[in-house]
Image (tube, rainbow, N blue to C red):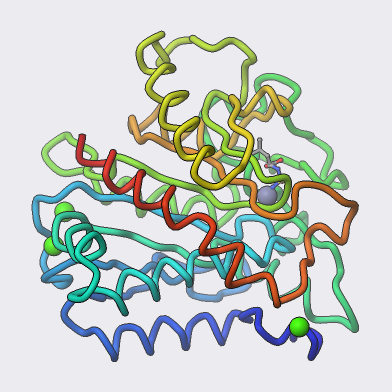
Length: 309
Ligand SMILES: CC(C)C[C@H](NS(N)(=O)=O)C(=O)O
Ligand SMILES: [Ca+2]
Ligand SMILES: [Ca+2]
Ligand SMILES: [Ca+2]
Ligand SMILES: [Zn+2]
């Protein structure tokens, strides 16, 4: 569990309870299921927020994923903040009501429940990043687009950016791949926009990560410009620094590259608070949760709006 002074952070079981409570309090607009199982057999919850939530309606779909990296616990709070905000304020806030009534919002608050649990299982924080397979994998290097192509990951199982033995070798990435593929109907991917929340450094990042070139197969000048314009606008709203993912460093097998190249999903990474600091940057005190999750409210609204463009 989290140390008492950080009890504001949610463990896996507390996250599951939060989801169950939201579904119980807002039955018409919340539908929750399991996307599949983690390496150690934990259900990976996926929550849908929309009017007539039990019906698949022809509305643009938006995905938010959190906690791909175990120690990045503030991101779990970010996803739970979106869940609470878009349910509690439905019917009272016109912008939120409009978003919920005209979109299908998918939230996966804990992509890596085994790693997240392990990170807080000892006496203090372990600084754990990867999943909990016998040869632990960096989930954000295990996606199948340009996997292992370009020196943006490691083939050494002892390294923190170990890409795994093959694309989607990790149950967690395979589970989310299957979920996204299940959102294709009539040859069209219904999810149009996505944010993968990470911490830390306060950045808004867009594809590609595998190459430093702005344009490449599957990314035209116009498409790049759309990413950059929306990325810059979201960064103006939260004070993060916008850039192409590879301007930070080259990554291959990342979630963003796969979401965009394989499904045409406008896929961003947000690196949350703080802007700097050493290892303790992954463990900001729970007193900052409210402020640092609400900091992204406008950006989330912008993405939901753009999803229908
Ligand atoms: C999305 C990429 C470019 C940055 C990310 N940084 S993190 N969250 O692991 O520190 C990562 O290395 O996966
Ligand atoms: Ca505290
Ligand atoms: Ca709906
Ligand atoms: Ca739909
Ligand atoms: Zn991360």
